[in-house]
Amino acid sequence: MLIEDENVYPDCTVEIRRVDIGGLTKPQLIQKLDQYSISLNKYGEQLLNDERFIVSSRKQRLQTVELTVRQLGFSDGATTFELFRRANNLGLECCPVELGPYLRMQYLDQPEICSTNISEGNKAPSGSITIASEALTEDNDFPKGFYLRRINDKLWLRGYLADHLHIWSPHDRFIFCRAQLLLHENQEDVLKGKE
Image 1 (cartoon, rainbow, N blue to C red):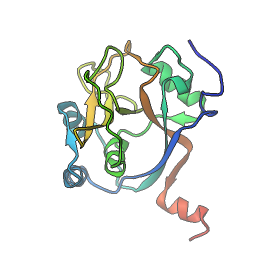
Image 2: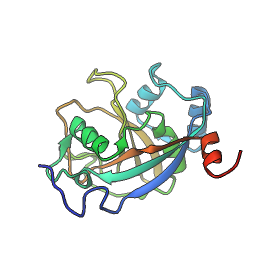
Image 3: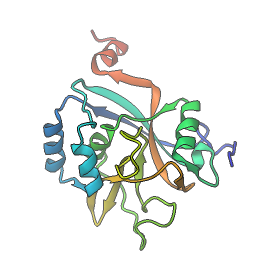
Image 4: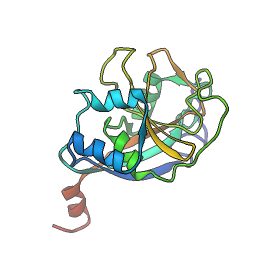
């Protein structure tokens, strides 16, 4: 069920971040994750090492918005397709897949939220934030994207599996990009009056 009230984006409080991505080769990116002591699960490694995971040689700054499924207007949860369509209608976009590693290295103070169950039914793991990105393949046995989590004071970049029927819980948290603020490094300087 889609709801419209003061607690739905853009009329709600959300976490907004500016994240710099790009400028590294894939081996450099993997080395940097290691330098930051970022842990990866097997799906995160599979996604990162896949040839379809492309890194940008050009640096860019993205503005991201973190919100819950409910803040997108879904009080009973929604499928990935429904979430992405609704976000797009609200001026948000899916993030490039490479945002996951860069955001993980820049978001080092993620709180740890403990739960006895790692995953409960349709609910994403406790304390996790899923990066909204287009899947690299429709294969249900291949990771659909990344999520960020802190477990026992360790920072994780984890991949996840979900088919097109998966219903995300209203409390699950996602990161989207603001469509109008995908700025390249030199474009931002021009906007600031520097040339």
